[in-house]
Length: 507
Image (cartoon, rainbow, N blue to C red; front, side, top):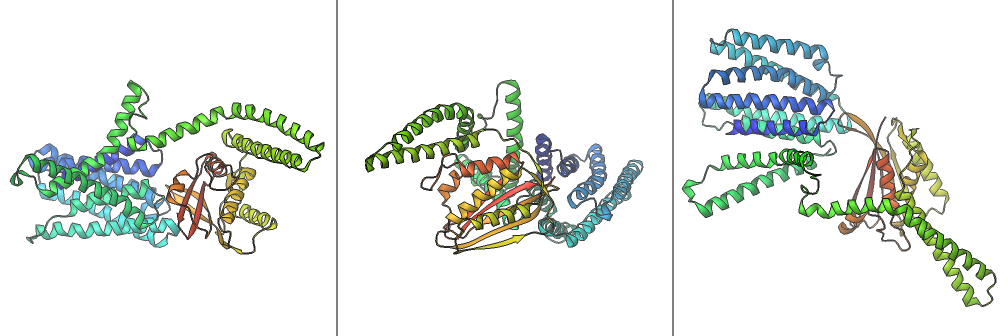
């Protein structure tokens, strides 16, 4: 059953990656590796049941085909700079796989020699990739080093679990754990390559933990239903139920995606039909935002014209007013008209499509300039600025004026969050995500933090906790960053402060 589960999960992973049509080499190489692994493990499982010669040959040829695909995947994961995984080495392994497959076909009647050559070749290629992984992990830096360390630790754990198979063959009473370990390794590798924004081990484990609890939940439901309509003696083995639950949980996403595409092509746009009832509110919020953008120009025009007339009349009356009360009331009218005019202007800024005049810029220089400008304008003496700017950052293509607006807005918000003083930390770092580089700008304060309820509304238009605020500042910031091909993340802890992360691609 464990072999079948590994085959099914490998097929699921391959299907999901191929359906999403990711163009990068890492995802495609892993998809094809999992596809061949699914075929090889499936053939091995069927050979164990039927002992058919066809499945034996399929298993052997699959083992041979896995070797060059494993080298190709590790070459994309580690990088082409690794000498042990150069293009020449790949072609050597490919030629070796062809020769090994041919040798097996010629001498497959001599079962043990033929299988020894197949397994020996696969083991040697696995050792080559493991050595290259160790070399690259030692020489890596930053987030890439962490990611490779996680892969290395996972491979070592799988290797230790595989020793149980050898001990079982030697006559020791031990369960064979290699297939279970391989299943966990295959899925963990998927998390690491698909979610490169999860740099820490606890985040990766949290992702895997969610899947684990879903599996237990599905298994629990099965046992509850089976117990209600059967007897304890008729219930299947717990391991079988857990592995079946694992397959069901992993299969949900690719099957849902396939059905969504089929429904969209045949009947209608299936996006809403396949949206969870619990997520419909978010979908409605997106629709509201799109509608807001469409009606913005007409609404602003209808508001601005009367406001201009009101302000002009109030200023004319104010110039000829004698009584102090009348002059004060007319002043209030003028101020409120100005405030509404500012709201309309920011509304248009949010709703209008941006024209990006992008040029290569040094992110650190922009941060230094923004901090210098803010310091000149009544900067609170009770706030300390700490800078942690990574040296030699590559230039980023961005519109200087628009991006300075983003920096100003976030820094000013941070200053307002610390009315009694605190520390404002501005940092920059280089990140590697899915083989591409990006610059991470972080602006962090030590203010009161943001509540969980407000965090969900933070980027919604017109949401604000400030007196007299328009609630469009952060919405505009996120839109500008998105138009530049980047994204924003916010983390906050009550009583400890808030950190805004702006990630922009390099090149």
